[in-house]
Length: 132
Image (cartoon, rainbow, N blue to C red):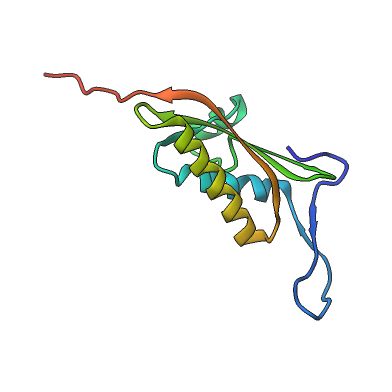
């Protein structure tokens, strides 16, 4: 998660009139990054923790799982943890994830990312249907 001392990411207003501050919760950035990563072909799922697994079993969709954000003086750093499909190129898929997450965050929030680190935590094999 983002650092606890400042829970919101502050952005400057882009128009000539200063109408006030814009603050984005780190959870919003995590959701944007997670959805962007799962849109890439070859990404089977995002890695969650025990709590997200329980929530999903109870029927709740957890969109921000598998993403960690950190705001430092150097900029916004994103860590993406995902499981990919067997047979896809890991370097190509990881690069597509990096590009997609960076571009989507920039389009939706105007924030520049310092780093987008991709962690492949597993491989999803095709499950075969049993023959009758």
